[in-house]
Image (tube, rainbow, N blue to C red; front, side, top):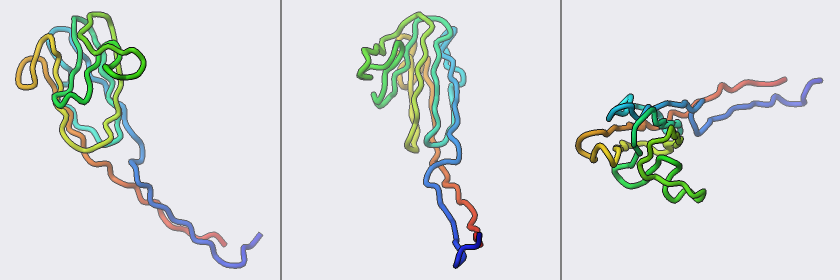
Length: 131
């Protein structure tokens, strides 16, 4: 079947081609591994307690999590806990997010980490004609 006039298709996607998933181990000991992570906006980071009494609190108070997160609407509790917990968070905006364990650190020393979120890069699709 032939169309009466050429049809031209093109698109520009506003988001990243494919969001990535990252893992940060919380403990054992008084460490985050990795302690520094660079991701793209839209990527997801999962924090998993590997042993010890820990939590993850953002320096800017945007999240506090362990057995769920404070204010998650599901009864989550961000207080430090010693069970094997995990939670995931999507970082939608570019910027630098510092975080720490309230039991073993502060925003400036001890058990702390940093996530650098780079802007996502739009993906442009090629134009093509259909006859």
